[in-house]
Length: 255
Image: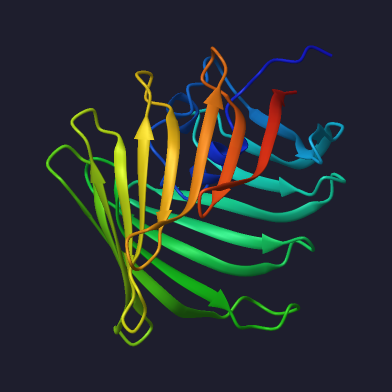
């Protein structure tokens, strides 16, 4: 079986939360009539100065229809067992996307209803939990709602979360540099300290450094990343309070 390097597992996970476009396969840089993409992540880490053997991590699979729109996302354990599944339904007339979440027993646990603007970007997400019994029709109860705002360049700059009663839960905001790279992430939650992270990039727009800050402005966590010639992340170093704690190295394949 031929093995070809592909995108990162972390990227694939993020894509499950992105609203559908006119052609999701093309948005994922896939060419041709793609029916599915399956990703297997493997990893190893350094222990006592020596790398452990390669081991399987989680794997995932996207399924697409004939128009290249993603219809399903499946997530598997390192043993190859289903952990959860998402089914996507797109309604062009109302510019909405419905995401149905199912557990490992393929029972519905929740759903998201996403509203898109004319540019195909999310403007609102309403989350519902299934409070019905497993053997009956799902009974959806609203949990949270997210409202999204963008800058003139189309960059997401704010996501505001409300509970089922319309009360503010938190606000997440982002800042970007002139190249469109996200350089700051901030989470503000009433009654809690504000969380702030910053990011640095190389000339190829690969994120090479990430800092998590304490409330007093000091760096608590520092992550440094390395990439191969194809832009795939191959190494991550983690520092806590300035001390190197571990190094992770991994690879991914398309099967």
